[in-house]
Length: 354
Length: 179
Image (tube, rainbow over all chains, first blue to last red; front, side, top):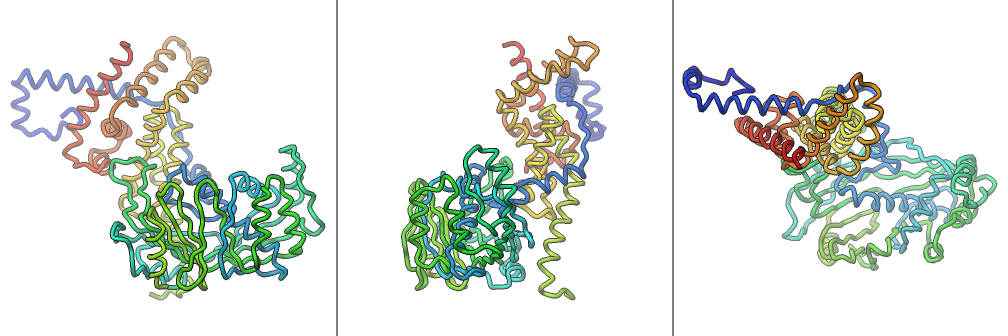
């Protein structure tokens, strides 16, 4: 009534004119509204939408350095997974260093390597030694159907012939065309990093300065099972986690210029902070030129070697029992994960049609 | 369709980015305004607004019908969540107080304005999420229909929700200042 006087009918008005009770209530409400309007007064806000847009576009969360956002994760989980993603990329780089064939790394199988958080931190220091740029920006996007996902990725979305009864039949498809990252070693950045930390950093071998590693990731399709939309009353932070995630991606390909495998290997393994365990584990990998190394944080999960679809895979079981996943390579790289028992995840994986 | 298959992903990406930019430019002022209404701090309000847009962009298509409503609700809730972290807020206000006081003609009046703002924000933080959001969204200039859409309730409920929320807020402010 106070907000919208036009909503009153003529009979309402007649009643109001004669009813002291209604007049008193109106006076009370009007007083509340006026008082709240005064109390909720705020300082002037002058915005520049164009420059704000530029800031949002440049924000790390909007354009992640490693190229893919993790929309389904709560912020608390994101740090760990971003660390894992960084480690995955950089361990691919390590694997490349082991390859005797200089220009090519294309994994045919997977192997788990236990890492500690300090290892991840040490590996992420590699970013201080050079610059990661994208010659083809990763452009993950949510699409409406498996057909749309195929249009973007260029291959059919995998079809799960078995999903546990507890998993919703609602599937959200996401797809990403091929993305190409270029890591360029930079001696001046390494020197600046050394000056900043005060720690002795390994000297760059001859030829490493300016060397480029080109990492091609994707195309990829991700299927998220479950209702991911936040409920009407939830805040922006409350996004439902998927009940099952199925992903298929072309295996990453790494090429390099200027630097020899041995130089790179020695250099990366000399980064301060890498544990002896990680160094030993990486060295123990049989054929690194064809092996994708999956870093598994020791305190978060255990990994086991499993057979999926007739090939070797790595299964990750969360120690808390809250989730598990399996990754394998059969032409493409496949991942099945969710808050499920490991046996269920492997059953989904075995019954996946690509 | 007249579109080469290989061009389709690029076009999808381009249209997605263009849609987001258009949404940003049409809604940013309002989203920042909602946050400012809660926080009474233009800098932090813009920070919240940008966080809200980043979250939206990561999760949803800008061409979704619910986009403005989602942004409005998220701005209110995110800003309200911030004032619930009261200790940090109070430390900042204490740090800002001398700066604001130096700009005003009447330091006593400025002190009272700051005190009122502190009291109202503390009271907002004590309200339940829905009444607090109704007040903030309506005070930010949203129509009843827009407030209803943002909060997922019927438009006809907004008048009653608003009246109750106003009364509750006044009560909370009185309670807060009389303690």
